[in-house]
Length: 431
Ligand code: SAJ
Image (cartoon, rainbow, N blue to C red; front, side, top):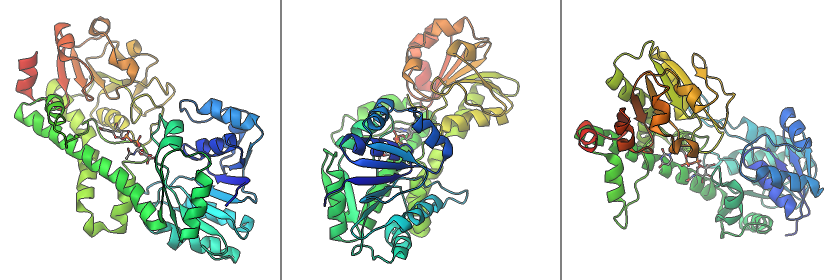
């Protein structure tokens, strides 16, 4: 199948790089977002998302005349839906954006068009929800128009590279739909393109992120076990991972981001009685922020009125994304415990947390603090010199939740060094 015009609905973390990449590969791309602010920012040549290389890619796409930005879809050969699927407070997938996007395509849909859903969705969404909406056009899915599900699987921070290089699964509602999807993505994807049915492709995406969540949960559980046995979990993981078939992930203050902490719920929602392991893993990971606060209270006693410096708020290193961030959950719990928290997030200096104070630098955050806690291992936090903060802090307690800092450097500078995943006796024997 040949494509000349593509309409991409949703210009967020996935839609914008995807639309821009297609445009720089010669397709005429109609980029659509219902958020007026996003449309205005993009039309002015700026981007609303921080991602390495994205700004220049978007500018190249706009400059080439192949990408235009709109607030509603227009006729095209193919449509890609890349809108968010948030999780509701009762942990169900909120498909309202997907539904609205599919409904907005109906008046534009013509015989022979292709529609691809990229948003992460519960199994069977393409066939049970999206197909019936699009069929209101009078055309039948798989016959009058092609319909496929193809999940994005790119890693924030490496989106542009992974978009092109990762293997891509395209699940059609029938074989012809999968083949049409392959023809579209083959325009820029250099990784393997695997064809399947739409429900399998939906399940693949959910399995990937759920499997990572469960693997992080076991790492977090190991870290709690190590603390109670007087073991250094980081050392133990390092040794275990020398085994040819073992790859234990890293413990930490919890799992954040819009994907790994959310997607497992889409499987649980679909079949709660047969997803108990997945639910247990979620609860282990969601319990980490409280555990981090507990580690600090064990060292300091009551946190009421104690000044604590929190370093990092984003959900993982070197990104500005705060969604579902466990670091924020830790700060909120410290505030609830009565602590005076001063936080510093270099990637989003403006971010506000009720009851806590935003600092403009590491020095500003640690000034007069009794304790400092490393929540995100941003590159610029890795090389903090203990001596440089020692002069500014009022107390001498450090909590490393990421296995980043060197215990001996901190203890030599006179600090009490607590590390998530390191039991008491091991901490003393190493100091
Ligand atoms: N984390 C740990 N320990 C680890 C690895 C991660 O605690 O060993 C935490 C991170 O700190 C972070 C969270 O998990 O809070 C998620 O980070 P991540 O880097 O594992 O993943 P994401 O959410 O940035 O991106 C994931 C990726 N999925 C997989 O690796 C299976 C990406 O490929 C997906 O495209 C993305 O979700 C998505 O959009 O679904």
